[in-house]
Length: 307
Image (cartoon, rainbow, N blue to C red; front, side, top):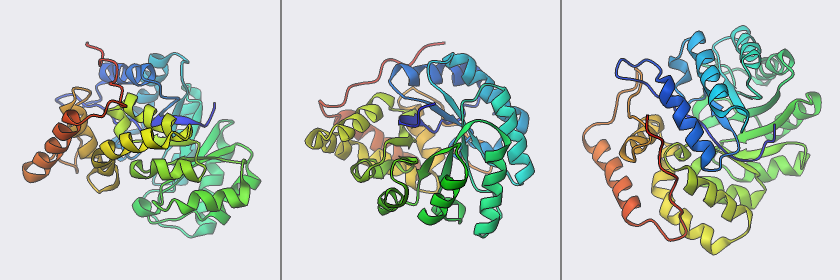
């Protein structure tokens, strides 16, 4: 398991009855790998994990592990209402072939540092898998500070990475200042990737990569290589879509982009509803403009595989 590169926070495809569309999940995973991603992250917020049953979560891991057949690692997001459930899920996905964990704070309850640490520690102790800590204070209301991340890194050797989604790129610098080289730092918000790499991030847990994997990988590679003019040209084109990853309806928006580009469906499970009206029109207009104005630096993705 190498914590580096572009790893999609995978959406979960549903059929017309809102059951998991496993054949599509498999094709989507293979297509992502063909376009250069370094790993697959399943069961996260973008994967609508809160709407999935425990058995459905395991079935997604089964499908992904079989589809990629060891070409890239499958990382399972661990999110649950209780610590016991998080530990049980971590053990189960390890048995199903996941190669890494992305550990979220407990859903709903916003604990203090003692409680947050106990929850994460229980998951880290539950398996031998390498793990990433997911810090997203905007979405979850809990904030792992750089000092707290350092404390976890010192105590748990299998904590190898952190997904920093505070939207403050200075956090990348702050974490590096405390434990540079000890953890791989990933950017977790799409519209901060170039800035995050400049600050020292080595990976990107990306959202719009679900629809545009080749462009996402190319943007990451250009930024890592210091090819600033080319990176900025691609970034400027990409930003209207990347910003969709940072608003409350990011799931609906990213799935809509997938549908517009023929790489997925806009179907979501309740309480979410598909976009309508002005929101839908704005999303479609953004995709249309992106298609019309794609810069020469952006290589088109390989065709999405047919059934």
